[in-house]
Length: 201
Length: 313
Image (cartoon, rainbow over all chains, first blue to last red; front, side, top):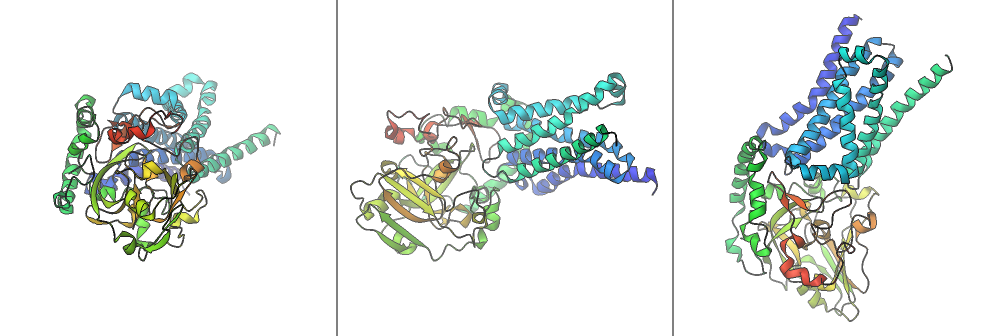
């Protein structure tokens, strides 16, 4: 298959995935705000948070997928996928700051300092911010070897995101645990390959 | 429309449901305008409302808007049907609340098992409009119909030694899919101290907005204790027992560091994972300050005199 076409198709897939949650919200509000239910802010927070985690897991799955299929062009998907995860993380954080807390900075700082699940969520977002800002070719050049080290932060962001979700839910830990299992599986795959490389295979 | 004391408002004053459905449209349209205005924090209506009117006691409730029927019946925490807020309204059609049997027992002179109609027959159904504050920090204002729990208990005749009331929800996993999962030790159990149960504010509700209780709201019989967090207001009750010891209520059993027996609404005692100082009134955009005892302090604070409420949460 034509490589260029494949890349184009995969990139289109990434954009479709990244924008689908937006389409979903559009669908809900087609008849008005009532489509978001009795607690629209909660619904959008949950929706954006879930998609942040999903896109983050998808971004983490790119390299394993590349190794399994041998399609090296998949590496081009890491940046758009990661940036979409950052996009939805920012929507999630923005809704929390602007609509949930109405820019009341005292309450927000108190939350970040005193509620562990918000502390880790904020930390995860800060990491994604740093990664987004340094995602350009200019920064790759500027940082050189340190760029790879910095961008390993995506693993920490993924872990913190799962913990944020797990600590947030009231009693039903099913979904956070599923995300946790996916994360562990993706990390385990990587560790296996790193071990193999270290052994010189 | 709202009352500070029982029996103040005749049912003729409750506005018909249709008017409230029209109000929902209005709220929907203005809410869209408010989203735009939300960029300028100081202009928010909800903040003004919160600072001005809700600051008082239960008397201030007269100025509060009822939560639209659509929200009351589609935004529910009723894990027996699922943990999503919309699960109960989507899945409750499987539930059949009729025929229904209520058992009264324990330390009473007149124990018995009653068909719901016979259970309710000796009592006059009253209108009670209450604030309901969920432990998750959202709240509603709901026009209930029901009977005082005190009348039911007096009829049963508490015996000496009866100090607590224990209430139990139906266990029917065939009609309640959430009960097939084991993360909660079904059936759901709640309890009150006898003086809390006998308080005039405490009711067994049989309807809302002038209609029979929808399944998702705890048909056909549920408790409403307006000065406590919503999880105390147990739904779809099949058993009421008077006992001599504090019952272990389900949420306390699940997570005792987060949920206690008393569960009085208290802005000064935070949930370990979130603040209880403010709440979102469903239908409003901003948050409003949470009131001590949900604004019913003038009627219930005396029940807790001398108690350290940060210990007895």
